[in-house]
Length: 294
Ligand SMILES: [Zn+2]
Ligand SMILES: [Zn+2]
Image 1 (cartoon, rainbow, N blue to C red):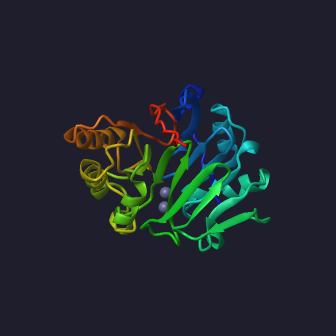
Image 2 (image 1 turned 90 degrees about the vertical axis):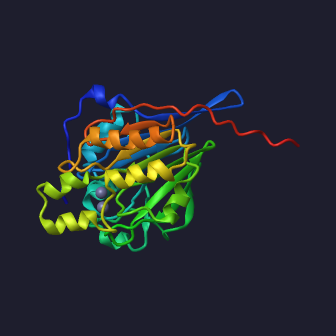
């Protein structure tokens, strides 16, 4: 299985995303860090002070370790890997990672046999798309997404009173997904391609059709339409990722989404993630959960 490595400078990697939650004068941390995002490799870290999970492992084991080290995390302190679907940009490093660091891999029953485990099978925790489960103190909802994989899913994560939604690799945004993403303080969404660039770009026609199909990937325009109409105005940070390297440009992604936010007068922080760096840091101001009166 091919593995992906990119030259990444220390400066880029020291910038990480995390969320502070002020509650009763304390500060808890629910960290969200995109380790890589794009059509070549995807991986993100979601962590509380007690629990750390990787979502997808599309980088090589070595590259994942390197990027984790840059943000002060150690591979052997990761508690689990969650897999969205079996495409290699999401799973290229999972078999090796789960062999070297014996942690469970959470994935759907249909996705498990679609991955080459290269020898010894890691501990698999199989879930049904649409169900809720917990890893440590993080509550995780899984939901089906429309994509040309066997049983692809998106996730939302809840801990410390914060909700993080994460969905990439989808051909359109059905109502069921909009429902799952509502109430996210941080939302990571795919903004894969610019339609005009895709049409004149280097891909063969059959691949272009696949990308544009309802089981393909989201265009910037579809994301702009969602942000301009149905995107939850309470979402403090919107991270756009899984950009196509050939058929998109970060500045177009930013412009389309920012215009949609501006039309609604939303001050949502916009972040465009990419393949090489983790160049963003964000904070969601404290969301205080009132203590129930007894
Ligand atoms: Zn992908
Ligand atoms: Zn995919």
